[in-house]
Picture 1 (cartoon, rainbow, N blue to C red):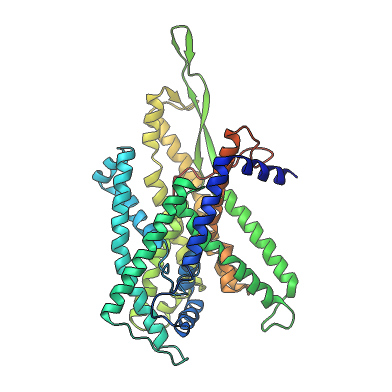
Picture 2 (cartoon, rainbow, N blue to C red; picture 1 turned 30 degrees about the vertical axis):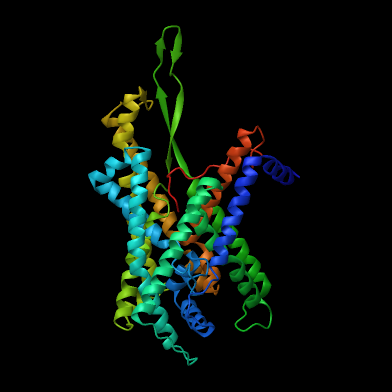
Length: 449
């Protein structure tokens, strides 16, 4: 009954109702565009690309983030990933280059400049990735056993590149409109929709494969129920990882101005267990793509190279795990700055009880971050390689991808952020929140993915 009452409250608020309807409309347009095929591509060409995508773990990952548009040779085939790549590069520049750091401190005007640079870099990446996608499409179609052929000349590749680039830029525009007039972060929401779009099909395929009489069926429906329960447990663990914080108490000194007293309140600094979010997984995947790319240029390899091109192999997942732990420490070190936090506290007459202000406070915060980052990085690495364990126990590749990795963390983070925004609208209009006790906490890192 409480759920029905909450839905009524959401529908009662006119602004929230309009934002939800606009979000649904824009998402529908995005999903419709995922099935608009590039000019000159036949159904047999799409079948050849889909067969190749199903055999390659990397291509399945790219196809998941594009909501299936990658394997459909759609005008949205490149999805939002070029924009994410450009955002990561600009973010790294903001940590290294003084000119970008200056723009970050300029407020809204600086943010607009960085967004413009991100768009320019996205276009550049698109004009590099689109021809590579088209060449790969031609290779897979001509190498298929169904006898179909696809010949893409220079000008054909040129105008299809423009179409693919325009499709991705249109997705960016939809994401910005969702952010401005809808609910949640638009770019993140589009990624979420692309991931969730694959879940019903993967769930249905796994269910059918477990039915008695199906080829390779093991465990029957009992095994399927166990898989769903494990997926729920992994999702709960991912929520705990995203939400986990270590609260550091901060006491502010009392100040008397005239007849009024200011300060004297105790607040908390929430240090996140996983302050790096999904960035370590993205960085580690970028490194792990290098052997796959080299193997593609050399026509495939065996032995050492094969171990690092198979996403289900032991050495691939071991190195992947180690890279995630290392990148978690690296990204946390450059994003969480204890020295600056200590200076801000000292400037505002704040201090941690029992710790001297200044250098001692910075060392104290740094020690806490080092302690909580270790279990956070290990847990993040385990979540990232869980799909390989799921595949090892006989779960299909499509369904195993939802047992961890970037997709699960993005789903959890974006859903929590969206629910937090809906709850804030309800609380603003003096309604109860979505939960009976407590409030939903979204991510505090400001990431868009």
